Image (tube, rainbow, N blue to C red; front, top):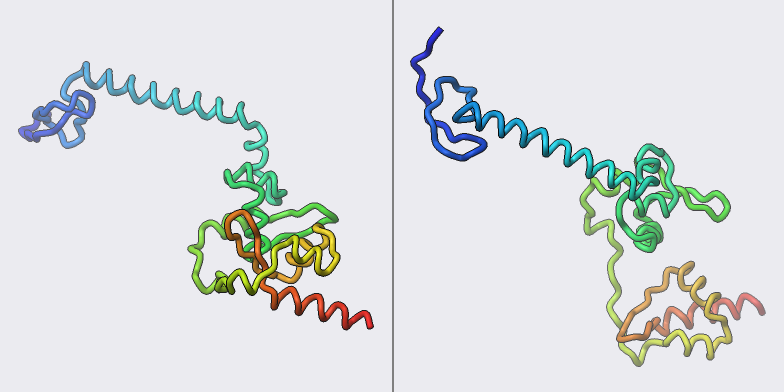
Length: 190
């Protein structure tokens, strides 16, 4: 069966223009067809080799990919995000976690759904405006005024959800927030 179809095509290998006799012809000659096939095989071998190299570099990554429940460290390896970033996401309440003693566990489906959905502005907490240096304490000032250790102060700040303002190399906290917390604690003791 011969055909009288003549289609102008561009060879996928040498990029030269040629006249094809079928609609499925991809190459201008047997040589280009052979070279194109070898190129495709070579690229697939390179991809496979790169994949094996990557799995040899990070053997834990292959193990983590199949797990349904991940620790913070495993999730950070899987998604290439720092552990601290995951803790920030968790502290903002954007990701559900389970605690087993001191160990934090995240469901894989929760992480996948978190990164697949666009983040709405309504989900984000409104940022408070900086009240000014005269209306703020530094961490050291709070420790000296109320006689509290740095660890206890940081736990209190985190538990109460107090906003810290970073200005230069110092962290500032609003005087109103700190005074309210320590005044209510001193009234509770009396």
